[in-house]
Image 1 (spheres, rainbow, N blue to C red):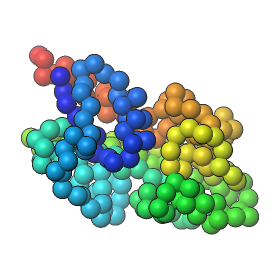
Image 2: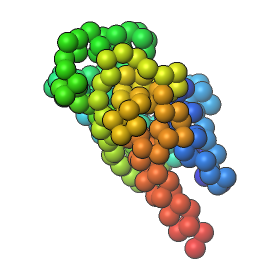
Image 3: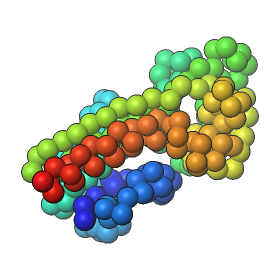
Length: 199
């Protein structure tokens, strides 16, 4: 059985990844299983740099396979902000959401385009690394809507459904989201590795 550490403290991300990575051949571990892990500063300038650093450092420290995610919201009107600083735009989800809505106050619907970006890195103790990047386009709603999800989900609107991520629920969200698409690509890589190691 392949053991994979998910390199995040975000319980919402952990749940989402576990739901998508539903595989009996994989045992999911989290950073809580390794309380002595050193703090890793996310000081990269891109999602790729941050995800790569987290995955490699944790895999090297633990001697286990590590899956690291770096993701965030990019808003066209704000020239791509908050971007890599998405989780640091406030002390909690409510503050971050309110900051976005305040900055977009009186901005019309046709100028509220945004996208979620996710970079996943799968790092092995022997130095092998696999990276994928996916995006999910949408718009910023005028008010928070819905009770599911986490982070910016209540204001990230999917026009095709006329619902936010927080209204769609986990099943549909995981089918169309940036992280859902990236995870399916990672799952394909993992399955290929499992098969190759058996032969």
